[in-house]
Length: 113
Length: 114
Image 1 (cartoon, rainbow over the protein chains, first blue to last red):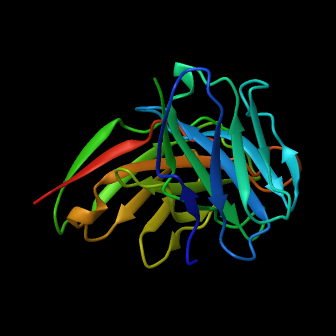
Image 2 (tube, each protein chain N blue to C red):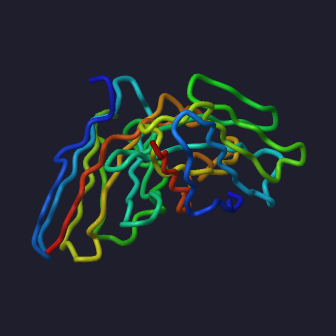
């Protein structure tokens, strides 16, 4: 596709459930980033992939959060035992290199009830 | 990354120039100034970036003071579609772990008024 695609656009889940959020980066982009944005705040960095490997996962809040990018393209952010505090918009971005501009998707709005 | 300070909100009349200020008084010599904007319910969009020279592209101009402690993003002819939150971000040129991150603050909410 022409841009970064994230699915689903909205996800409502019950507290304690497991969720997966998907990101399709721009074709050919080797760098992929996940950010989280709470209401009224700017996006916060979660994790960065260079190819298939997570080069920096220092922004993941705890071990309930995990992300993969097995073939160096599509990435999945996985959240176990969801909590109400996990409710936010999860944004994915990709770039052709570390120093080039990042292109963001529309985000997935996660609501934990 | 150096901390940035931006006004919380600004208004601009449609068709006029929008001048968005940003203070980054602790910026280091190898740090760039980036601007992104976020229109409601969309992901952030890259606008422009610069190191020390003024920069212009099809979207905006970036004016960086000589001491690099502040900058101004200029939208020359604001339209209603420019209503968004504008983020000024200081980002170190790539030098290893962490330098690729974008550290967003709360930004400036620009409202373009008809």
